[in-house]
View 1 (cartoon, one colour):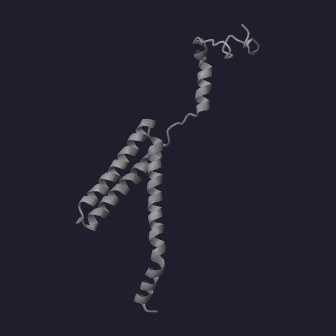
View 2 (cartoon, helix red, strand yellow):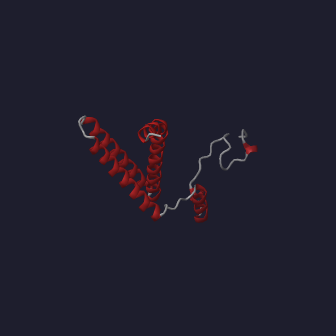
Length: 142
């Protein structure tokens, strides 16, 4: 039992599991936070939120790529601020609740309750095509 040997052995065995699990957990938290934010926003607002999120990610990547001597502390600070901002926005959006979704069947039912005005539009009658005003047994007569 040398403590230094135990620590080295533990790091060698556990690091291949800990690092990917921590990364997957972090990504999962960010995905859930962003989904809450998108579900709370209006339809058009969700598009703008997604575009803004993509621009921030692209901008941070471009900043890191164009400055090769950027210290690891600055990169870590950028990631931390971005992650905390996303998680905070997701928690606030989750507390606010999702927007109300309407299914297509509900919208169709509302339209039929209001009266279907599509029947008011005159339909063309095409001979032989079985159009409105012709019964199927009248096709070909004439």
